[in-house]
Image (tube, rainbow, N blue to C red; front, top):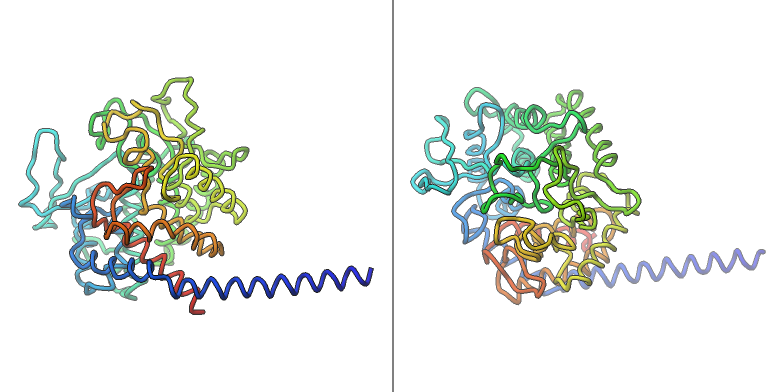
Length: 429
């Protein structure tokens, strides 16, 4: 018995030595990684050129800006960062909703099939646009302001008046919009249209960015995860709101796991429909695994370490089965041909199974945050390699790892830059 105890202690000591050796080797690999150095330099180069999502876009979108505002803080003065946030709040509608994006007024040319532009007396220079099939604009603004305040320590911004409300009041107003206008009383969660994971193209209409009479309303993990993160951010910035919003946040978190988490299959259900599915009864939508929404759920603190581990294993299996380049794969398997009227939403196209570093990078961040450093380092490699190989941050990649869309996609630059910073903080401590 004594001998077994001694053996056990020796094995434990050996394991600790091996673990420390592995950690030391990993830290050295991080410090010497040339792709990391290239990616950071390229990210700074790309973000210096503006605030629109990328070279294929004229707009500043809040869901994108939220993911590169911290990177922008490396090269722009505080005032420039704040002014973009102010524009979103000057264009805030009278029910509290936040526009999807804004564009200079002189470029806001109305066309028959284009956006319906939004104007405000508070904003003399820009017009807004609202893609209302997605429900992440309000949450994205709260998160972006939070990141700005954390990065700059400019807490005074929260008390700045925009019209008749302070910034803090406008942020809370945007959360009230979600409760008042996007709330399911049956499930106590927020709803959106039927999109692919975090996507902003609904199943119906050739374009698919506006709610129509054919829209099918649904709950999904991405929208609700984003709101949970936003509520945490809001309460941290404005502690006096905690008593009001903490019970709502906690109830939402409980309901997400009750209604959207599939315990048996250890995954999130793609959609819980409020008025029936748009898809045939013989189509099993729950076979689809949402990579992006799962990453956001982890950021919202909804999954345990064991569940994160299982989630990563499923993502790895999906990448292998699809042939994709990284765990940024939007979802797997993709929706069948014809599931979306938008022609760009073919299987493995765009948001229907395209490989997006914009979300893959966020999964890397969460792996690091939750202690999966070795795994995170392994799975960021293809993401930074293709930045170097293609000399840019492309919007998305095909399953054959071919770049598509904007080559200066700032959201991808932002999430990779932050992930690399997190690796460097680990390696230097």
